[in-house]
Amino acid sequence: MAGYASSSSWVTGSYRAVYLMSFPIIAFVALRKVIGNQDPQSLITALGLLGVYLLLLVTRGFVSARFNVYRNIYFLLQSGIVLALGLMLPYEDTWAMLFIPLSFQLIHEFSREAALAWGVFFAGSIFIILIYTSGWISGVGFSMLYIAIGIFFIAYDYQYARSEAARQESQDLLQELRQAHAKLEGYAAQADELASIHEHEQIARQLHDSVSQIIFSISLDTQSARVLIDKDPQQVPGLLDRLQERTGRALSEMRALITQWRAG
Image 1 (cartoon, rainbow, N blue to C red):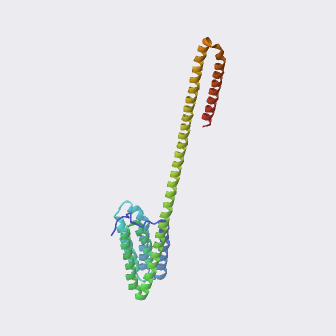
Image 2: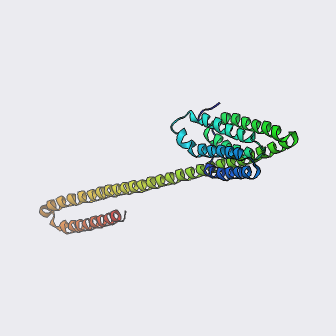
Image 3: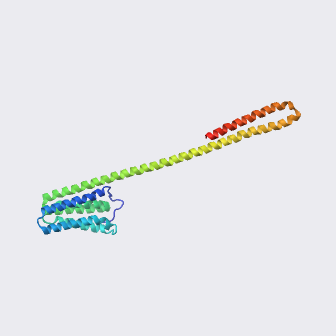
């Protein structure tokens, strides 16, 4: 029947609140025993059993962490204590409330199937003892009341756990989206940098091609001027004017491309 909680376990998000709720329940059962019990020996026994129940409750986590098999022993001991309280004279019904903290521990610790099996055992025990101690009508009524209260709290806790899981999933998704956004921003920055480098390379290529053509033309005109100085000196001034024009145009294009480079 037992086994530690698997992937199908009901792990509740409000387990701490349920744990704290156990202490008022124990105090209420103890108060009811004190008020309704006229036998000192029976009262001492009842309070002793409640003390053991409380001790097992607060030490369960510590012991279970060291001995895995203790989980089954724990619920057997606690069930025995609750059933003993239910069979003690004078008969009363508040002892059944002690099964509520145990039910929350079940859905926290065990697989769904094991928790359901234990829950059926708890419900059956409540029915049998309350019918035995209170009669059919009162016993069935009290049993249905306590079982309904337990189901209500467990259902609420289960829905709370689902909402917590959905909220955590939304937070995880939001975190993933933020990380993806940060990566996209990094990729965009790299793309801008690559585009800037590509643009600079393009400008450098244009600068090289344009200036190379102009310098090549200037070199040809210079060679022509040397030839014309001896053969036809009258054409040299016109050739020098063209050289000056091409030199000025080369300087202008170089300045324009350099300005564009700096702006990029």
